[in-house]
Length: 329
Image (cartoon, rainbow, N blue to C red; front, top):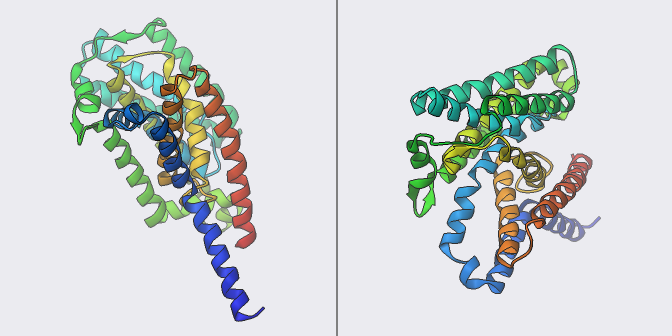
């Protein structure tokens, strides 16, 4: 191959790589452009974007919680149940037992950590597939949530949590958005610049190879479940602050969108790898599309169609991208 042909091939490969890396951002901007043309007054208003950014912080944190065990090759299907139980813990302790809201929040974080520890113990001690364990745990947690709430929504929670999450705004956007970005920044830093993040990536690529290389694979996997549990609880705290109440059922609806965003995000920024920046972009890409369709008057069932279809497409794309990355490496 001549130098000219090699240079041409390198440029073509560079275009392909950049297309994969930034394609989701371009698609997101295209969606904004299309709906902005169709409904410029409503869709392009700052109030609309403020609502999109602020209200979806729960989904962002839940997605970030998912990608930590996913990076190690594990699933946490209990994370949405964790969200509802953590939020209900705050409501029950604050409203029924008159705990200060700060103590109730710490109790919710402890509940999330406990759920993560139980998942890790069952998966690693009994060597059961994480998909089965966390699916069962999620159902079990939901039963506990219905039990302690008597299947009722609990309102009357201390207003200070809503003040700290959704009422107080910076540049017109609720603080919940910035909390979610902070979580994303921490995970990005750990994934990119720490030895713990590198070990996690190594475990995800091949557990047996990682074990032979001296990495404590079970320890790494256990930590991912603990982190996922805590982030599920953080999402529950944001859920309570956003609604001003705790609903025993609606939190479960976040699970499918979170998985769709996690896998879609794996096709962007760092293609073939679950990454926090891609996950955040994927969340807002999906939500922007749904918001635009809702403004156009499309029925609410489009949300299920959009998220379900996005999950299937995202998984397929992530597998294609990962396979290409493996061939090139």
